[in-house]
Structures are given as C-alpha cells and as structure tokens.
Image 1 (cartoon, helix red, strand yellow):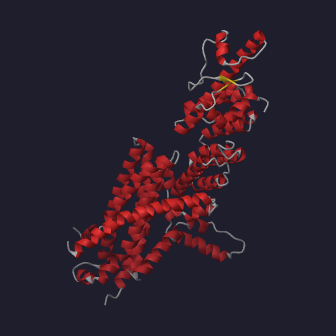
Image 2 (spheres, rainbow over the protein chains, first blue to last red):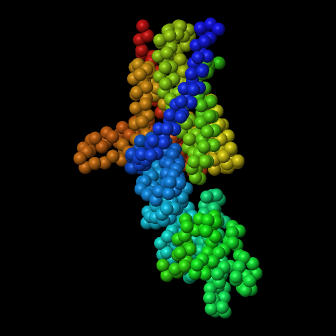
Image 3 (cartoon, one colour):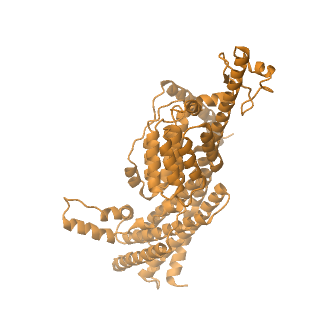
Length: 306
Length: 258
C-alpha cells in the first residue's frame, strides 16, 4: 500500500474511535451537569411585543416555536415532578402575543395553568386571564367559554360564574346545543357527581385531541371508582348494622350475600377494604396511582360545600 | 423571441447552471423533518407549523436569492466584461435590464412553485386531505412572489450605481424599513415637530410597504383574504416595480461604461 492510500484509511480508522470517545466523554459531562443540576430555565426576552417586532413578518412561525417550548417546558416539569412553573405564564404570554389566533395555546395553556400542583401551575386566575384574552382576539370561537366554565367549575368551584360562562358561550350561533344544557345543569345543581360526569363526558366526546381525551377518560374512571367505593361503603354499613362490626374484607361481604362477587374498578383491579373497613382502590393499581395525581376531583366531590 | 426574452431566458439558464435551485432539496428535507418531528414534540400545531414553516422558508429563501443574485445581475456582467460584448450587439440597455429582471423573476417563480408543491405535499402527509381553506396559503405564496419582484427591482436599482456590498445593504435596509411603514405613519409624539410628522407620513407612503404582502397568519389559520386585496396588492407591486425599474433604466442608461 502506498502512502497516498494510507492517509484516508488512517483517517477513517481514527474517526470512528475518535467520535466514540467524544460520545462517551459527553455522556460523562452530562452526568456531571445533572449532578450539579443548575436551573437552566430562562426566558431572555419576556416582551411578546418586542419579539413580534424582532420576528419581522415571521411572527406566526415564532409563535409555533414558542408554543412547542411551552409544551416541552410543561412536559419536562411533569417528568421531573417539579411543581414550579415560573416560566409558564411568560411563555404563554409571548406565544399568544406573537400569534393571537393560536387557539391551541389558549386552550391547553389555560389547562396547564389552572390545574393545581404537581399537575399544573395552580394559577386559575392566570388561566382565566389567558382565556379572556383568547376570547377578545377570537370572539367567534365559542369553545373558549366552555374552557372558562370548566375552570370556574373544577378549579374555583364558582358555579354561578361557570354557568354564566357556559350560557354566554351558548349564545354563539356556532355553539353546540349542549352548552345551554350545561349552563342550566351547573346553575341548578352546582357540584355533584352527575354534573361532573356530564362535563367530563362532554369533553371526552367533543375533543379530538388524544391527550385531552385520555385526561377526560381518567376523570370518568375515577368518578366511576368513587361511586363504586361509596356503594361498597353503604353495603359495609348495612353489614355493620347486622353484625355489629365492620367487614374485614370484600370477600366477607360476598360470603354474607351483600355482593355477588368481588367488584373491580374500571381497569379490572379488585377493590379492597382499608383498616377502618372503607372501600378503596388496590394500592399500586394504575387507577390508584392516577387518583393520587387527580385526587382533587374526588376530594371536591367528597366535600360538596367546598 | 424579443431581445428582453432572450436575456431573461439566459439569466434563468445561468441561475440553473449556478445550482441555485439546489435549495429545493434543503427545503424538502426541512419540511419532511418538521412534519415528522413537530407531531411528537408539540400539541395541536402540526398543520400550522407546516404552513408557517413552509411560507417562511419560501419567503426567506426567495429573499436571499432576490437580494444576492439581484445585486449581481449587473455587476457580475461588468466584472466578467460580458456586458460589453452584449451591448455591442443590437441590445439596448433597458432591454438588458428588463431581461435580467425577468430572468431572475422567472427563476424565483419556478423555485417558489416547486416549494409550494412541496408545502402542499407535506400538508397532505400531515392532514391526509387538502381542504378549501388551505387554498389561502396559495394567496400568501402569490404575495411572497409579488414581494420578491419588488425586492429584485430594488436590488437591480442599487446595483446599477453602487458596489454589490452596498447594494445588498441598501436593499436589505429598505426591506426591513418597509416592514415598519405602518408604525412610521402612526408615530406621534408631543415633542415631535409637526414638520417631522409630515415628513414621516410622506416617507411612509414613498417607501415600499412590505407589510402589504404579509398574510402568513391568515393563511395558517385558513382565514379568507378578500379578492380586492389581491387585486390591489398586484397593482401596487406592478406600479412600484415599474417606478423602480424606470429609475434603474435611467441610471443604467447614463452610466459611463468606460
């Protein structure tokens, strides 16, 4: 082999181990940084107006990028179980200033803001501000009233304002007829399981977004499980009246003829009785984990006066 | 074929020879990557990103081509001394200039049409259908073409009397200024002298208003664009190009080629 052919061959032989070394080294450096864990979240320019000017005519594309950043920021915080969402509002503010017609940013943004920690920022006030800004920029889009109503209903438990929001939205000629039903139901009954089930059912059937659908399905499952637990507790009360003690297990209720079989939650896991003889989900089951996450809905229902 | 047409066709051929249309490969790859990646890292904006990214890329790539090729249309011919051979033939200076303008515009049009086809293909990949509302993007693309025609005319004008570097700066500067014409018109301050306010207002109408052609947001959200606006913008671009090209022809005709 002459020296002219030897050069490129040597280069190829060096490149592969060379880049493999760089790769390994970078992994080690990343591990060092993870150990130090510096807070890297920052938003250098917080003025949406300034960014809009700087983006020239490409503000809509910038808005898409900022919205993606919102989603990544929210997702990253959730993965790290970090409940501090300081940049969520500034990011959403910039996004909606860059493109006031970006409907998805208002809808999901308000959801991210309103839900309490660790799921969201726990700022329903900012969520309402965002939705109202969306209504101002897109008055023809009736779904914002639906979102506004949900925030008042689920997060602030202000049923009069929730009903008013649903009613206002139902006045839009494009709004679906159930908005009026929703307004009447919330105004009449306030917070109860049937109303909550009705609301989540509407979200489940009306949304095409898989994430929103999954969220609604989980809430419906938890409401179903809550109802099941209450029904089992009622049977345990009957058992107590008859036997002067609480049942030790679900199987005891079955053997005493109060139940035909061991009832299961919507995901197929059997219910259990705790030390006080109260029905609960199987600890460690997928729904029990979700309950910890979404527990507020059920606790709200347990305390209707809240 | 008229002499203007011959010059235009040769300008187009030269651009193809210079591998200018290679940018289409970059554009196609970028849109394909965006279509795949955005669906996985964001929520609910796959379609918006395809339209916004596609239109922005058509605009940016077109602008870069219009400015950088536009300022070289005359200076390159002079540097290579091919201009002298050309003008020795029965080709008038205005015919040469209009031919150059037409040739670059043809290149940009073909480039834009190809990129638009790519944009719609990417959109079809994401949505699995093309709706009537998606047609608004075609109007936005047409407006980008009108804008590019205006930029080419300006680049040609500046390249007729100054160096390529200065011509790039002047064209770029005028383009950015043209995006803030409305702000200039609405600029009011108590400390500003009335004469300055009148001057700024006058200037805002003289400068090319590139904001007229910005309908990217409407296109992304499928909002209707009135036919009257399309007609008015077409007339505006045609009239402004005619004025700028007339000025360029006048300067170029008087230029001492020795």
